[in-house]
Length: 442
Ligand SMILES: [Fe+2]
Ligand SMILES: [Fe+2]
Image 1: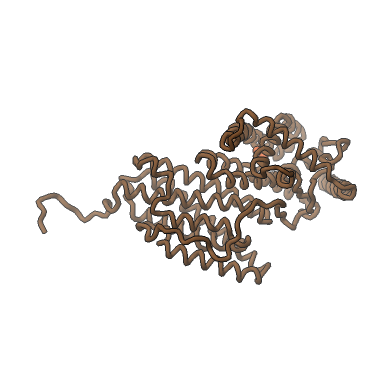
Image 2 (image 1 turned 45 degrees about the vertical axis):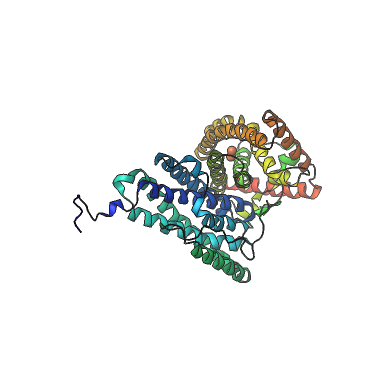
């Protein structure tokens, strides 16, 4: 029918500015929810590779979510509405539900085979259907996000396969859970790029287990399991050492920063609904940084040819926070990070210089990058401890008291060491030092 105006059948005009903002807002909430659940599961899953990779994925999600959020603001979506899921409530409630997965296997399956693929497909559909001319800024970061989703799914697939080969029994329950998540996702209309089909949340999933912060972190069984990972922690007369002893001690410290990844994940998740978006954005980066420090230590120890079964992997700092009576575990874990960052940072440049003098370029390199990260973390720690206190109706100025309380908690926990633990630990340390000495000569 002739309209008397210039018309075209171009697909470019499929989505108007407001439609685009609606979709990007949905993606923001999906990423936000995914990363909070991933963060909360870090302590409960044992393999080191999964812990460090989840830390990387939550950082990727936080970067994507931050770009989405900025873009939604640019599109002049009413800012009040960005705070709410709106029509996507049922969808986001379902995403939130995987935090309460009944087991690690169920969590891996529902995220790796259901939620992540749904987000990946939605990004692909968005990139195909949206207009690059009008929406170029979104295309740039969403293409990267799509590539990252592909990588994340591949990693989850690997972990799921490894998990199935270890325990077939638990797998059946995990499949039931994951199928239910898939069904609910389809009922809610999927992620996709279409208007949501239902905004009415469907309630808790059958078989859900209310999430609680793990008291004891799971440890990768390839390493030597312990609470205290080096003798100087429990025996003040044992030297931190120089030369090979310092090289080894420093790598063991880095590896044992696994506790900091776990602390980062727990606190990110615990305060996600209490603190503003910047909290999630900062603590995702913080958690990722700690996973890089942990990997630095792991890579150095492996490069020196040492055997994981002879390398101590401890739990004491995490457990100092979670087992202390009358302690709010999440606040204490944040306090622990702040305490250890500020306590150790002054030693780093001095150790970096020693490694340089040994010609150990790798330890020098790692220590120097670590130092740069820790400088950022010390400022995160102070800022966010204050904000947590304020949110809890306490005096924000009391952040240093939390730091002192954490120091006392660690002291108290170290006090529970048994003489057998000390004997075993000294034996393991001596054997490792001897091995390292042999490799030097080799
Ligand atoms: Fe660190
Ligand atoms: Fe740090």
